[in-house]
Length: 294
Image (cartoon, rainbow, N blue to C red; front, side, top):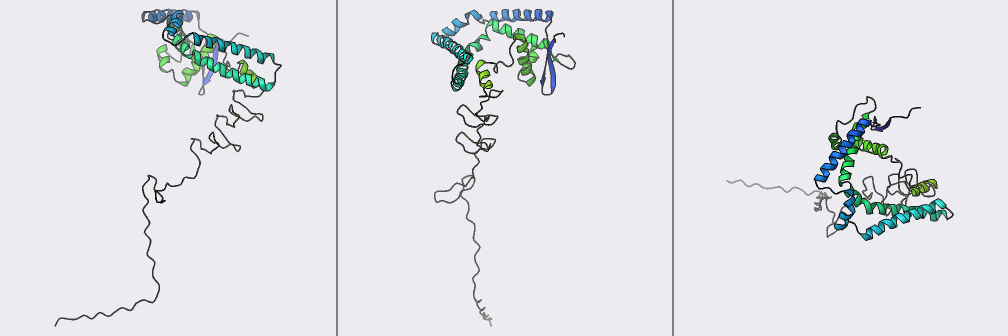
């Protein structure tokens, strides 16, 4: 059976495809790389080889951070071997897996600044231009084979759309040979899922299969705190609604004399009491003598 020459994916109900680039398209993409590389150098962009020196001169990287970087790598390797080898308590292995998660996160934070600067090197700019050129050339509508974007500029302008984001992710998997389930296949995550400490999406579970946070507090599938009845609560157990507003009976505020105030803090006018009718025998009307002038 012939190997498929395109990768199909779906966005908001419509199917798109990424075709395998032709030899001509690869040649044109290389020319785009060279063009942008030369332009970047002329504009004063750093070469990747000088990035480390630049970061040190700017105080963005030093021997301490370099040592921390190597320490994190070593810790991840050592912990991975312990998880792989077994022979320890499952509870201890669980803690090691969580420690790996934390260490990996710290490593990513440490090198985030370096990665951001690498994109702006001459090589980084040129590689990005080649990637965009090939993506635009290879991305088509699956039903008719027409290109989704006319050029790289149009793709860049649409960069925040669901289609552009999905296309970049799928094309990167094809272009760089990335694993779309990279996070799931990390050793710590594979262990946690295998022994049902997390679900397939990496969300933490307790022994009864309920979603929990790192402290063991119940949460729903969206990570919000809930009580035993499944009702939304805050971190201290107080009921809240979908917007996070407290579900409590609201009472009016009082003035210094203890009288209720209106919604804007204004005094509430006293209601006029209707005078009560007095009971008893009605008085006789007195006759009024009218004197006439003579």
